[in-house]
Image (tube, rainbow, N blue to C red; front, side, top):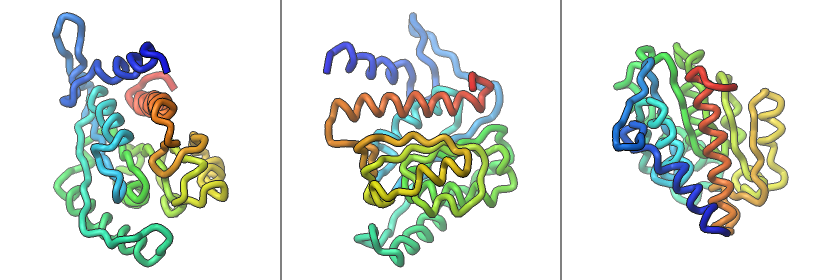
Length: 227
């Protein structure tokens, strides 16, 4: 893997600060704020908000002028994968904690809302979006969604799933087909697990860059950018 490629990844994410300000040459900064925007992040059980998919998508959203709100959960039972009862318990725990935190936020005050979820967080995001009074303003970014995510009706979305994800049955996964039937663009990442990683660090960095650029394009569509 060349230094030029690694440097391109660094440059792609080094032009913004976490406060959402775009860094210009010469050190000046301009905050994009044409209308009120909110990005809500729904992490997974073990895949927290500081992990790559959540961290970099958060930076992109902030760079595009979105206020950031991060859901955080605690109190999950152990050994959840493959145990339907524990999975449902985990969903209820995450749902209750997310609803409590969101109760302090007036979604109706925002004209453009992003729900960005990972794993079980996509299920929580989908349910909340489906029941929201402003569901027409909510768009979803779904990283490694579960089949339960699609039990709810929600608006515009984009999805990313791996063909080696044990949480959705690896090669038996129905996620790509479900997305196709729902007209949800879905990127199927070869040899990627539930973290959308293959184990090859440089290949994973390259794939992460592609995923983030797709995420940014989707985010930009809601701001009046290119479709």
